[in-house]
Image: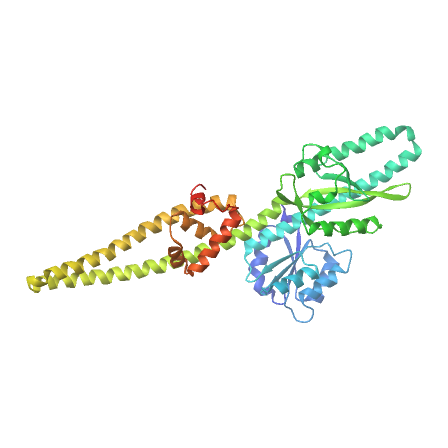
Length: 436
């Protein structure tokens, strides 16, 4: 868990009074808050104080947030400071522009304090891990250089020095790897094998590094490797990892060239697993969408319940009037009056049936949704609702009426749900949902 008590956060906004509550909220967690009113002032504050993270407004007079970010990324001293954009812009093109400028994350206004705190902690955690990775990489490089000097000075101690080096590699929690100039894996440590789900190094030695990556990351990593092989430095960033069992993970890694007799013979580095943090961010986003959908449905049900209550009052009034008429009209109208009474009673029964359905739906929907999220997190909130209604043996027309959809749209959703659940053509969707 990141401790904000030792953290300096720069908040850049031309209207800081709009962020007073957020600033106080972050200060309650111990963070030191610096404030700048525009891009130029922000650059000065960064030079003087070098904050750990920057919350940067996009729309500012003069130098906007994107331009300010580009200026910071041009300075090698400050380019690694995480920058989170704050803006009301929601177009994909605006988000892409922010990431191209060098932003690390993107928060839309109005700001949710808990969301800001989670994203700030996530970026600080990643930066801390990257710094630790760089430190380990620097230590490794220093140790290798020292080892090379020892080899030149004391050839007889080569074997013991290599054993000490191997102990460092095997005892670290980071995944170590060594590949040759052709991208073939030549050595990995136990942490690397555990991270990727392999039991033995024999399963991967001699195979191309691309077996552990997902397209299009193979091309991206190859570009990084080619850059390092030329003697230049490169920042790999985050990548998807393909494990042995086909599951997906996420990692960052550092990499350095390995030289022998003055020539580069391969590359080595360390992996840091960030799967838990990445999945947490994805789940948070999905849960937010699901919460919004549930709130909307709850409002719809409340509105419907209100309409039923009003209808019930009207029916009660009508019942009373009919009772009066029954006492006044002749016996020849008694049969007709009884028919009307039956219709009214039927309406009230429908209302009670709906209330019972609503209570049962809410109870089953909560349990069923939790199981769906654990088993099939790629399902959207609306797809989960449709799964629930189908599980209750409702027809497509009934589902369409409840969710205010066209029947054709429900059929399209059913087709997409079958694809997510990976059902064959002979498997019944409703029967399968009943097993979850």
